[in-house]
Image (cartoon, rainbow, N blue to C red; front, side):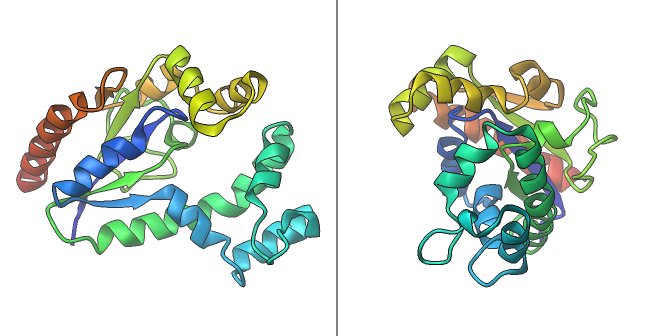
Length: 212
């Protein structure tokens, strides 16, 4: 079991998935909040029933699953709706992440949490003040400039510039993410540059877990 858990976060389109894939290639278990969020509102789940109770049947796709595209459009234009959805989904996601990390083999595990900065107070990178995630021992932020986020969003999702701006604005700012960081991985260059950075972080976390 992995008692040492690193929280990994970054803004939308920062390249978190590329980073976590490299950790997984080194044998590290990654518990993904996006996967946990899907499980939390799977068809037939209490979470999905609660979403329907809050937002109505229009929250569902034709097959009875959550209509993610419709909900995304709704919550990115309505702060109150986003808060209601997060209040339903986030506690379930935290439980699933913690359980996955606790059961992971190896000296440490990673919890990939896109909205971690929104859930944690700025604590100067210290374990005290981990807020909703007191079981995290360290926080790694994947950092990119906002103009890089914007360009990647437009290319990746095929959305217009206005929606890209709203998606970026709906999250914590770059400075707020950096304020909770113990470690920062800058991902504004070629993907190959990630390999050495991830390898160095993996060695650091293995040593920290062994000394814990």
